Length: 292
Image (cartoon, rainbow, N blue to C red; front, side, top):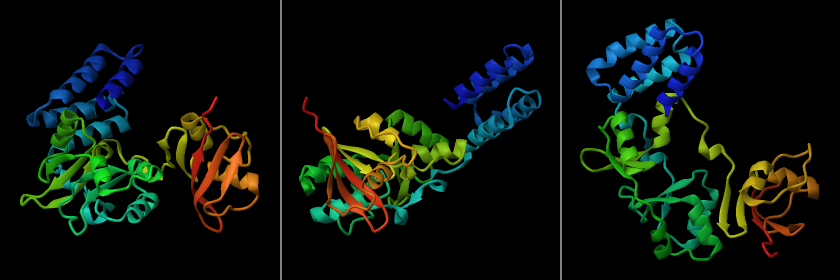
Protein backbone atom coordinates (compact mmCIF):
# COMPACT_ATOMS: atom_id res chain seq x y z
CA UNK A 1 0.00 0.00 0.00
CA UNK A 2 2.89 2.33 0.74
CA UNK A 3 4.37 1.72 -2.69
CA UNK A 4 0.97 2.08 -4.33
CA UNK A 5 0.51 5.48 -2.71
CA UNK A 6 3.94 6.64 -3.86
CA UNK A 7 3.24 5.43 -7.37
CA UNK A 8 -0.19 7.10 -7.39
CA UNK A 9 1.27 10.44 -6.37
CA UNK A 10 3.94 10.22 -9.02
CA UNK A 11 1.48 9.35 -11.77
CA UNK A 12 -0.71 12.29 -10.80
CA UNK A 13 2.22 14.64 -10.49
CA UNK A 14 3.97 13.63 -13.69
CA UNK A 15 0.96 13.14 -15.93
CA UNK A 16 1.04 16.62 -17.38
CA UNK A 17 4.55 17.96 -16.90
CA UNK A 18 6.91 15.03 -16.28
CA UNK A 19 9.06 13.48 -18.95
CA UNK A 20 8.78 9.86 -20.09
CA UNK A 21 12.15 9.23 -18.47
CA UNK A 22 10.85 10.37 -15.09
CA UNK A 23 7.72 8.25 -15.43
CA UNK A 24 9.81 5.19 -16.23
CA UNK A 25 12.11 5.89 -13.29
CA UNK A 26 9.19 6.05 -10.86
CA UNK A 27 7.47 2.97 -12.27
CA UNK A 28 10.63 0.86 -12.43
CA UNK A 29 11.69 1.83 -8.94
CA UNK A 30 8.39 0.82 -7.36
CA UNK A 31 8.31 -2.47 -9.28
CA UNK A 32 11.87 -3.30 -8.27
CA UNK A 33 11.15 -2.46 -4.63
CA UNK A 34 8.37 -5.00 -4.58
CA UNK A 35 10.74 -7.78 -5.58
CA UNK A 36 14.22 -6.46 -5.01
CA UNK A 37 17.15 -8.59 -3.88
CA UNK A 38 19.82 -7.46 -1.45
CA UNK A 39 22.31 -6.89 -4.28
CA UNK A 40 20.03 -4.26 -5.79
CA UNK A 41 19.72 -2.08 -2.70
CA UNK A 42 22.57 0.29 -3.58
CA UNK A 43 21.26 0.88 -7.09
CA UNK A 44 17.79 1.47 -5.70
CA UNK A 45 19.14 4.06 -3.30
CA UNK A 46 20.86 5.81 -6.20
CA UNK A 47 17.58 5.77 -8.10
CA UNK A 48 15.80 7.33 -5.14
CA UNK A 49 18.33 10.14 -4.90
CA UNK A 50 18.14 10.74 -8.65
CA UNK A 51 14.35 10.63 -8.56
CA UNK A 52 14.26 13.22 -5.78
CA UNK A 53 16.48 15.57 -7.70
CA UNK A 54 14.32 15.27 -10.81
CA UNK A 55 11.09 15.86 -8.93
CA UNK A 56 9.84 12.27 -9.09
CA UNK A 57 9.97 11.79 -5.32
CA UNK A 58 9.64 14.44 -2.68
CA UNK A 59 11.84 14.27 0.41
CA UNK A 60 9.30 12.52 2.66
CA UNK A 61 8.70 9.83 0.03
CA UNK A 62 12.43 9.32 -0.39
CA UNK A 63 12.85 8.93 3.37
CA UNK A 64 10.02 6.41 3.53
CA UNK A 65 11.40 4.24 0.74
CA UNK A 66 14.89 4.43 2.25
CA UNK A 67 13.50 3.13 5.56
CA UNK A 68 11.84 0.25 3.72
CA UNK A 69 15.19 -0.73 2.25
CA UNK A 70 16.67 -0.97 5.75
CA UNK A 71 14.02 -3.38 7.05
CA UNK A 72 15.97 -6.35 5.74
CA UNK A 73 18.86 -5.59 8.10
CA UNK A 74 16.92 -4.78 11.30
CA UNK A 75 15.98 -7.71 13.60
CA UNK A 76 12.48 -7.80 15.00
CA UNK A 77 13.84 -7.67 18.55
CA UNK A 78 14.81 -4.04 17.87
CA UNK A 79 11.18 -2.92 17.74
CA UNK A 80 9.44 -5.25 20.21
CA UNK A 81 7.83 -4.21 23.49
CA UNK A 82 9.76 -6.00 26.24
CA UNK A 83 7.87 -8.47 28.41
CA UNK A 84 8.34 -6.37 31.57
CA UNK A 85 6.54 -3.46 29.85
CA UNK A 86 3.43 -5.47 28.94
CA UNK A 87 0.12 -5.69 30.79
CA UNK A 88 -0.99 -9.16 31.83
CA UNK A 89 -4.30 -10.69 32.83
CA UNK A 90 -4.25 -13.85 34.94
CA UNK A 91 -6.69 -16.42 33.59
CA UNK A 92 -6.94 -18.09 37.00
CA UNK A 93 -7.45 -14.86 38.97
CA UNK A 94 -10.72 -13.98 40.76
CA UNK A 95 -13.36 -12.30 38.59
CA UNK A 96 -13.04 -8.98 40.45
CA UNK A 97 -9.31 -8.85 39.79
CA UNK A 98 -9.77 -9.63 36.10
CA UNK A 99 -12.41 -6.92 35.64
CA UNK A 100 -10.35 -4.39 37.58
CA UNK A 101 -7.40 -5.14 35.31
CA UNK A 102 -9.51 -4.69 32.16
CA UNK A 103 -11.22 -1.51 33.33
CA UNK A 104 -7.99 0.21 34.33
CA UNK A 105 -5.87 -0.89 31.38
CA UNK A 106 -4.91 1.63 28.70
CA UNK A 107 -4.15 -1.11 26.17
CA UNK A 108 -6.55 -2.75 23.74
CA UNK A 109 -4.96 -6.19 24.29
CA UNK A 110 -3.74 -7.93 27.45
CA UNK A 111 -1.26 -10.79 27.60
CA UNK A 112 -3.03 -13.86 28.97
CA UNK A 113 -1.22 -16.20 31.34
CA UNK A 114 -1.66 -18.23 34.50
CA UNK A 115 -0.56 -16.78 37.82
CA UNK A 116 3.23 -16.99 38.30
CA UNK A 117 3.66 -18.05 34.65
CA UNK A 118 4.32 -14.75 32.88
CA UNK A 119 7.26 -16.32 31.08
CA UNK A 120 4.93 -18.76 29.32
CA UNK A 121 1.92 -16.72 28.13
CA UNK A 122 -1.12 -18.51 26.75
CA UNK A 123 -1.84 -15.83 24.14
CA UNK A 124 -3.57 -12.46 24.31
CA UNK A 125 -7.10 -11.27 25.10
CA UNK A 126 -8.86 -8.19 23.65
CA UNK A 127 -9.73 -5.82 26.47
CA UNK A 128 -13.19 -5.18 25.02
CA UNK A 129 -14.01 -8.90 25.20
CA UNK A 130 -13.12 -9.02 28.89
CA UNK A 131 -15.32 -6.02 29.61
CA UNK A 132 -18.18 -7.69 27.78
CA UNK A 133 -17.78 -10.80 29.96
CA UNK A 134 -18.08 -8.61 33.03
CA UNK A 135 -21.37 -7.14 31.85
CA UNK A 136 -22.73 -10.62 31.19
CA UNK A 137 -21.43 -11.85 34.59
CA UNK A 138 -19.58 -14.70 32.91
CA UNK A 139 -16.07 -14.05 34.19
CA UNK A 140 -14.57 -17.48 34.85
CA UNK A 141 -11.37 -19.22 33.85
CA UNK A 142 -13.29 -21.37 31.37
CA UNK A 143 -14.97 -18.38 29.72
CA UNK A 144 -11.77 -16.34 29.65
CA UNK A 145 -9.89 -19.23 28.07
CA UNK A 146 -12.34 -19.06 25.16
CA UNK A 147 -11.31 -15.44 24.55
CA UNK A 148 -7.59 -16.17 24.29
CA UNK A 149 -6.26 -15.54 20.79
CA UNK A 150 -3.10 -17.10 19.46
CA UNK A 151 -0.38 -14.76 18.15
CA UNK A 152 2.21 -15.21 15.47
CA UNK A 153 5.37 -16.77 16.96
CA UNK A 154 8.64 -15.19 15.84
CA UNK A 155 12.33 -15.77 16.67
CA UNK A 156 14.05 -12.61 17.86
CA UNK A 157 16.65 -12.84 15.09
CA UNK A 158 14.18 -12.66 12.20
CA UNK A 159 14.32 -9.42 10.21
CA UNK A 160 11.50 -6.89 10.25
CA UNK A 161 10.97 -7.47 6.53
CA UNK A 162 10.62 -11.22 7.06
CA UNK A 163 8.29 -10.61 10.01
CA UNK A 164 6.14 -8.42 7.77
CA UNK A 165 5.85 -11.29 5.30
CA UNK A 166 4.93 -13.65 8.15
CA UNK A 167 2.23 -11.29 9.44
CA UNK A 168 0.75 -11.00 5.97
CA UNK A 169 0.80 -14.74 5.30
CA UNK A 170 -0.74 -15.61 8.68
CA UNK A 171 -3.22 -12.70 8.56
CA UNK A 172 -2.09 -11.81 12.07
CA UNK A 173 -1.54 -8.50 13.82
CA UNK A 174 0.22 -9.53 17.06
CA UNK A 175 3.45 -11.51 17.34
CA UNK A 176 5.16 -13.07 20.37
CA UNK A 177 8.95 -12.98 20.13
CA UNK A 178 11.20 -15.70 21.61
CA UNK A 179 14.96 -16.02 21.93
CA UNK A 180 17.03 -18.99 20.77
CA UNK A 181 16.36 -20.83 24.05
CA UNK A 182 12.59 -20.48 23.78
CA UNK A 183 12.30 -17.70 26.35
CA UNK A 184 9.50 -15.17 25.87
CA UNK A 185 11.09 -11.79 25.08
CA UNK A 186 8.12 -9.57 24.28
CA UNK A 187 5.52 -8.57 21.73
CA UNK A 188 5.75 -6.99 18.30
CA UNK A 189 2.75 -5.83 16.30
CA UNK A 190 2.17 -4.94 12.69
CA UNK A 191 1.86 -1.38 13.92
CA UNK A 192 5.42 -1.47 15.30
CA UNK A 193 6.70 -2.49 11.89
CA UNK A 194 4.69 0.14 10.03
CA UNK A 195 6.11 2.81 12.34
CA UNK A 196 9.58 1.81 11.15
CA UNK A 197 8.44 2.75 7.65
CA UNK A 198 6.19 5.75 8.16
CA UNK A 199 7.39 7.14 11.48
CA UNK A 200 5.47 7.20 14.75
CA UNK A 201 1.71 6.75 14.45
CA UNK A 202 -0.94 7.96 16.93
CA UNK A 203 -0.97 5.65 19.94
CA UNK A 204 -4.12 3.57 19.92
CA UNK A 205 -4.20 3.73 23.71
CA UNK A 206 -4.58 7.52 23.37
CA UNK A 207 -7.76 7.16 21.32
CA UNK A 208 -10.85 7.20 23.60
CA UNK A 209 -12.72 3.94 23.26
CA UNK A 210 -16.32 3.13 22.49
CA UNK A 211 -16.74 -0.56 23.29
CA UNK A 212 -19.91 -2.49 22.49
CA UNK A 213 -20.66 -4.77 25.44
CA UNK A 214 -23.91 -6.22 24.15
CA UNK A 215 -26.80 -5.15 21.96
CA UNK A 216 -27.65 -1.56 22.92
CA UNK A 217 -25.03 -1.36 25.72
CA UNK A 218 -21.68 0.41 25.35
CA UNK A 219 -18.75 1.31 27.56
CA UNK A 220 -17.45 4.80 26.78
CA UNK A 221 -14.27 6.49 27.88
CA UNK A 222 -15.02 9.93 29.26
CA UNK A 223 -12.98 11.46 26.45
CA UNK A 224 -14.95 9.71 23.70
CA UNK A 225 -15.86 12.34 21.11
CA UNK A 226 -19.61 12.76 20.65
CA UNK A 227 -19.45 12.48 16.88
CA UNK A 228 -17.80 9.06 17.28
CA UNK A 229 -20.36 8.08 19.92
CA UNK A 230 -23.22 9.03 17.59
CA UNK A 231 -21.69 7.20 14.64
CA UNK A 232 -21.07 3.98 16.58
CA UNK A 233 -24.00 3.86 19.00
CA UNK A 234 -26.67 6.11 17.49
CA UNK A 235 -26.85 8.22 20.67
CA UNK A 236 -26.88 11.89 19.67
CA UNK A 237 -26.30 14.61 22.23
CA UNK A 238 -27.62 18.10 21.46
CA UNK A 239 -24.90 20.07 19.64
CA UNK A 240 -23.21 22.75 21.70
CA UNK A 241 -20.04 24.81 21.67
CA UNK A 242 -19.58 24.00 25.37
CA UNK A 243 -18.63 20.31 24.96
CA UNK A 244 -17.25 17.81 22.46
CA UNK A 245 -16.98 14.64 24.59
CA UNK A 246 -19.42 12.43 26.48
CA UNK A 247 -17.93 13.58 29.79
CA UNK A 248 -18.30 17.21 28.78
CA UNK A 249 -21.92 16.62 27.80
CA UNK A 250 -22.74 15.04 31.18
CA UNK A 251 -20.95 17.76 33.15
CA UNK A 252 -22.70 20.48 31.17
CA UNK A 253 -26.10 18.91 31.81
CA UNK A 254 -25.57 18.33 35.54
CA UNK A 255 -23.31 21.28 36.34
CA UNK A 256 -21.51 18.94 38.76
CA UNK A 257 -19.41 15.78 38.77
CA UNK A 258 -21.68 12.75 39.27
CA UNK A 259 -20.99 9.96 41.74
CA UNK A 260 -19.71 6.55 40.69
CA UNK A 261 -22.71 4.26 40.20
CA UNK A 262 -25.09 7.15 39.56
CA UNK A 263 -27.52 6.51 36.70
CA UNK A 264 -28.64 9.43 34.55
CA UNK A 265 -31.48 9.56 32.03
CA UNK A 266 -31.24 11.39 28.72
CA UNK A 267 -34.39 10.83 26.72
CA UNK A 268 -34.72 7.09 26.12
CA UNK A 269 -31.06 6.47 26.99
CA UNK A 270 -29.48 5.91 30.39
CA UNK A 271 -25.88 6.57 31.35
CA UNK A 272 -24.28 4.90 34.36
CA UNK A 273 -21.09 6.40 35.80
CA UNK A 274 -18.42 3.69 36.02
CA UNK A 275 -15.34 5.69 37.00
CA UNK A 276 -15.00 9.29 38.15
CA UNK A 277 -13.07 11.38 40.63
CA UNK A 278 -13.67 14.79 42.15
CA UNK A 279 -12.96 16.66 38.94
CA UNK A 280 -13.60 14.38 35.96
CA UNK A 281 -15.50 11.44 34.48
CA UNK A 282 -13.29 8.61 33.25
CA UNK A 283 -15.75 5.97 32.03
CA UNK A 284 -19.50 5.48 31.64
CA UNK A 285 -21.92 2.82 30.45
CA UNK A 286 -24.43 3.88 27.81
CA UNK A 287 -27.69 1.89 27.80
CA UNK A 288 -30.00 2.49 24.87
CA UNK A 289 -33.70 1.70 24.73
CA UNK A 290 -33.93 -0.43 21.58
CA UNK A 291 -37.66 -1.08 21.80
CA UNK A 292 -39.65 0.36 18.93
